[in-house]
Length: 102
Image (cartoon, rainbow, N blue to C red):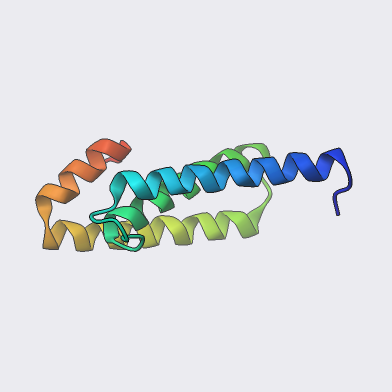
């Protein structure tokens, strides 16, 4: 458990991550109350994948996190496949914005 300064630093770090997530949701939402559309889910998963990749570069033997990363990448891939089938223009725009390949 954290005490004092370490705790406050952890709170600030988590608040920053939450703010980044809110910014992603605002950028990719299709209407005011949208938090679960495919585009939003893919954007949030991409951010999580990026963060977890950085973590795994530092902690190479963290196999539990590696499994979580692989599950997130698979989920993102399935969502992207669905988006490609349902609306190819949105798919192309999204992978261009996020810098994904396929």
